[in-house]
Length: 227
Ligand SMILES: *Cc1c(COP(=O)(O)O)cnc(C)c1O
Image (cartoon, rainbow, N blue to C red):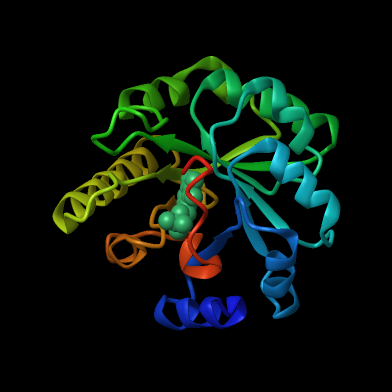
């Protein structure tokens, strides 16, 4: 596995406007450093423990994204440094991110995670629930948690049409929410969709952020849980 080469190849095949987040979960710090020393600095993790440990052990100028389910009582550990929390799935979580970010005088970019897959196991909000959050009085009081878009994970399937439909749905939700709630807000612009197996379809459907793990770092060992 030549990590810098993998990153370079992915970058060459995607538009420069699409942001690549390298998902380094389960991979050692040495792998991240290989990418880092080749000039790549944007990484994502899905577990708080692992994210904190890696952040401590790695250079300060890395841009960290949290992409996994986040418990409210753990927000305080990542609030001092995390750049984006892609997996916000409740108003309660959003309010705690706001409070903890405020303590450090920081703005934390957040994506609302929509449930777009047919699988029941994946976390995320329905479009209705997102609308409820955006209409709640609490939402208008947020200062340090900034909603910049949506995130979604497609069904794990080889059926390309199913994946494409789910990404289309996410992009449609984005357009609708943009029009209804953020018409003049230039910061609300991100659609995070697409992983190693499906980022090409995701980009065709309007993705602005892709989250790629195994195509950069190699397959993860089976003994660890996949998400
Ligand atoms: C693991 C993970 C990815 C990357 O998956 P790959 O298939 O290895 O590219 C992307 N997004 C989330 C939320 C993940 O947990």
